[in-house]
Image (cartoon, rainbow, N blue to C red):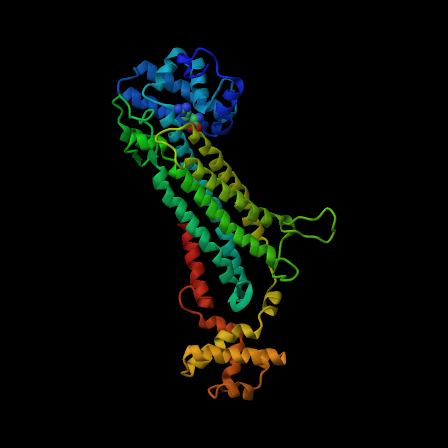
Length: 456
Ligand code: ARG
């Protein structure tokens, strides 16, 4: 039995029916569908569309349906086209023809958009807390890192020394922005479409603001045509998911590189690494590689939905049924990745001696230029002088710290014996004390802020 058979003389072709059916995807919104229906029944009752008895019967029936979903006792039947049809079919079995009154003034167009938004309103906090757990792994590692130094890179070339803790936290902040983006999105998800009908509004005197409030929405949608077609929230959600994927992929890429023998900056714990079926010595960072790989799929989910939405005539078009699968899949992907990455990072071991060994004195060439700035020479000139020093040391195959003072003084008379202090990487770090820099104090302040943020 379909909800729309009245005007048709033959049944839908079987394969067409299967193509049309969305139950396998939208059954995830079962609880939301029942909750929306309960609230709609209340609204119809308040509007005197449902009598007291009808309202009581529908509400009791829906409570039973909800219990059946919660306990796993609900049985779908082959004729259930989507979750909305399934709930109404079951309600009819439970309470008889009165069930048919529930759809008064309602369309699956406003119903599905409502269910989807309700679903997302509970998914956002779930993602948020998974992100927060990952952020706390990063803070823990930052605290553990203490004064450990590591090379900082640009273009993947050794650039300047940094604190390992500063590096850990550089992966915290992108996730903080992701959480803020998700929270910000909530206000656009929290708009109630129910009461828009199929497209043009409803001829029943339902108080939509009260209905919005009863379902936990901030407001009722202001335009019925827009309400049944708006999937901005789904696209935005997928953008948030893709951005999280991109952030995690960058972090993952660095862990993959840094756990290689060539770098040897980190070692993964056995519980988060995998072996090779052929090479007995291998310890592979699969979880990070998978995370890096899945970022590609997450980007695809966003671009796929945007392509579906592009050029759609207003208002509801069946294309919109394609909106839920990517959103569910993106959520599942992230909820699978995030706890694993959080665990893998919490149990990773840093190798401070390897990191320290990768810092050579040329990485203090900027500090050498700054040293001369301190002696009153303009930076443009000091940059060139320091560059010459790097070249001279390179030609002799020695470190900057091994060049004799006379060689420095030949480049600039401003060099004095204190120049050698410049090559202590910790000194270089301590100087970078402005907000956001890699100095010990600045990173300590950062950790305090990070802790505050994840508690908020
Ligand atoms: N399964 C549909 C969807 O996900 C529900 C809305 C159906 N509306 C319609 N006019 N056929 O979009």
